[in-house]
Structure formats: structure tokens, C-alpha cells
Amino acid sequence: MSTASLTLYTFAISHFSEKIRWTLDASGLSFTEVVMTPTLHVVPALRMGGQGETTLPILEVRQPSGAVEHIQDSTQILQWLDQHLGPLAVMPRHVGLNEEIMDIEERFDAIGKDVARYLYHATLDDDDRIIGMWTQHANRNQARLVRLFYPLTRWIFRRRLRINAEAAAQSAERIQQALAWLDGRLSDGRHYLVGQQFSVADITAASILAPLACPDQHPIYGTAQFRQGAGHSPAWLGNRPCVEWVRRVYKAHRLGHPGLEAQAVA
Image (tube, rainbow, N blue to C red; front, side, top):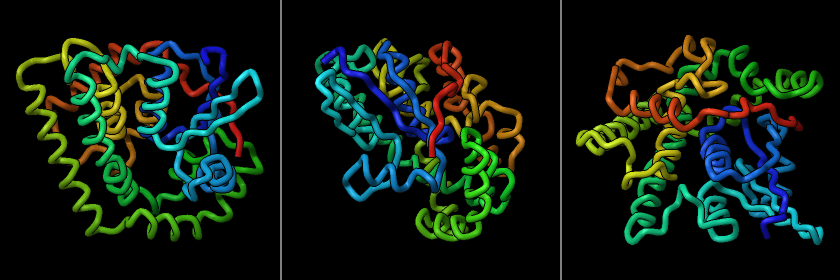
């Protein structure tokens, strides 16, 4: 099984994609990243996932025999990696720790859409900014298609993700609840969320909150262009301890990030 080749299909801007990219890097697992273009990813994602879902990341596992398996959904990918290529150091098997790690992973996964909804509510009408982020790894023809159909895409996206003032306010409330929980968890001075070592709990919380914390080590969220965009730094974010913790975790554990120097396809 260790000779299987891994290909990770991602969105460059996706915090769920970052979660798996980081897990693979932290686990020393070799993989090829294929950065896909939002909207143009739909048909390939439907074909690979086989579950009627268009979400990324998707992990493709290709065996030496030629057999190919696709795992869709970040939590499913984590579990597959640990079961087939583990035990992973970031998913320790000590009694009680694994369950606690996965509880925290679930807690922060649950606000992933809220973070996206909140930020897109502030920026989705900034066509040039969103198209620029979506097409960062697209070729000229792909970028042209995204721009041409963006008005329709924006309409569909707004409805599928429920991007409106009321839903964005509800998302902001859920995010703040998660931040308050995290501040409480860190109030005893701990470095890591579970036990004494870096784990998937830290990776998930930091990845999901990265669009708000804007750590320097993230190739998109750490850029001046993203930081200067509307909505990324709400008044309620302030200088919360948990935000500084996200930045510290990135600084300590995201060294050597490949910078999304990845193959890009539609």
C-alpha cells in the first residue's frame, strides 16, 4: 500500500483543502496536488466522487496494479489516510486522545461553511477580486470562461451557500461561539489543543480559521491582497488569543509549505 501514488484535487482558496494538504505534508506523505478552478471543477468532481457531490478536496489513490480509488470529503480522507497509511503522527492512538482530536476536528469543520459564507457575503460582488482568486491557477481560456459566466455563477453560488445578510449574521455568531470556545481551551497556556503534541485538531482549527487570521505562511490568506479585502477583519475578531494562536501554529508547523506550486487543471 505504501507504493500507491496520491493525487490531491483541491481549490487553492479552500480551507478544507488546506486541512488535507497540511496533514499530508505534516505526515511526510508524498503527493501531487492538482489545483482546480471553481465552477470548472464540477464535472470532474462529480465523476471522481461518484456521490453526486462537487466538493473538494478529493484524494485519488492509484495502486501499482492500476486500481484507482477516490475519497471525497476531508474527514473521510483523514480516516482513510490513518487506516491505510498510518498510524499518522498527527492522529495519535493514545487512549482518549484520538476521540478528543476528532471531536475538535468535527467542531471546526462545522463552521467551515460559516467562514466561507461570512467572507463571501462581504466580497462576492467584487467581481475582479473573486475571479482573480478563483483563476489564480487557471489558463487563459479557463479564466475567460470563469469571467464570462461569473454573473450566473455568482447567482447560483449565492443561493447554494445561502449568502445573504441574515445567514451571514448567523454565521458570524457561530464563528464567534467557536472562537470563544477556542479562547477558553487555550486559557491554560497550552500550545496544542489535545495533549502535548501537534495533531489534526490543531491542523483543522488553524486551517478553518486561516481566512480570518491571515497567517503569513498561507499562500493566499497571507497575502496583502487578501488582507486588504473587505470583510476579512471584522471588529469582533480583534486581537483574540485564538487568532494569535492560529498564526503561531502556522509559523511553527507550516514551514516548507510548497506554496501551491501545483499542476492546475479545469
